[in-house]
Length: 179
Image (cartoon, rainbow, N blue to C red; front, side, top):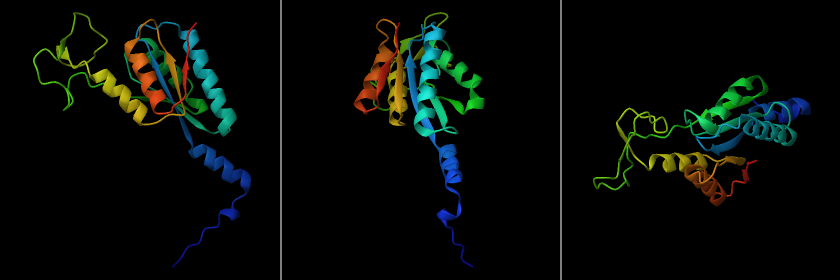
């Protein structure tokens, strides 16, 4: 038995609706773990969501991708995305693996860093962490691709600026959002 499908059999608006519903636009977000300017970040997320809807149409799904830090910009992005799920917004998180070194990490003693008491920036199970975990996570976020990178740096923000640099090198447009 053979089945034939004719694309022309579906009305054009239905094809467009199905096509838009299956499209996910990824927006990479990166920001300081010290960031507390919720309004600044939420305004940038809303602008990006609005731009995606204008470009791709209603029904588009937009994934805000972040590094899963337990505070700062990542937490603000995550909470905003969860609060807007009804509008096709999703939160995509990628945690850094602070507990494990990569094969290319130096084997020499002293590579790993001891956590300070109360350290929430490196949420692993061990008492020490691999300092290359954040940059590895940033590289993976960029490798997965994105329509846009929103950067929310504060001061030096080494990790944030590293992720923005990697995004530019991967030809992902970067929008630095500051006051």
